[in-house]
Amino acid sequence: AQSVTQLDSQVPVFEEAPVELRCNYSSSVSVYLFWYVQYPNQGLQLLLKYLSGSTLVKGINGFEAEFNKSQTSFHLRKPSVHISDTAEYFCAVGKTSYDKVIFGPGTSLSVIP
Amino acid sequence: GAGVSQSPRYKVAKRGQDVALRCDPISGHVSLFWYQQALGQGPEFLTYFQNEAQLDKSGLPSDRFFAERPEGSVSTLKIQRTQQEDSAVYLCASSPAGTSGGYNEQFFGPGTRLTVL
Image (cartoon, rainbow over all chains, first blue to last red; front, side, top):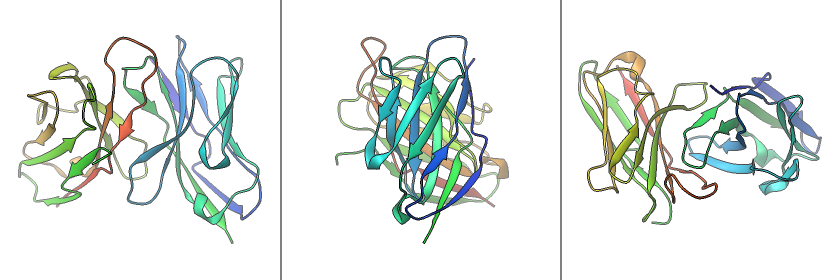
């Protein structure tokens, strides 16, 4: 079975500062890895995904993540955050293209002006 | 519309009432998923359809939860005799492909927020 850990439940950061949201996963098989963003009262939007190949993945809104197989991590980073990045961020894993996605508990990112 | 739609967006039910939540997936999408998101938590899988076939219902928390997709398009999640612990946001997602081929992104709807009093 797969599981996802997001160690930081809340991350406050000043506008234009860099941010890293941490994600660790466990799985006995190869998985796909995802980061989703959820703005207040909205559905989930895919930020980026790792399927295979290059371990550095670039997504929308200037976010990127690095897959580290040895550390079973998939941390999300952005070099300079904006107020509009304030949202809930979920790391997730999936086994196949048609399987359910297993989500972490989420990290609430608050950007302080 | 272009995306996944869900209705109603908000539902308040008295404990013991039955509710029905609707999901309209993106046209032509084969796969459909239901997730439950409790307050302050990540979404948790409930059930999965490929066309009209319910291939996985391992996440349904009790026999009070029932889902259907009779024509392989619109899906309904029904909760009988609602309890306070059923209060959550119910998310629907659809994906273009079934059990073959490479990765296919799941597109999420805005969710239905259910409050059981």
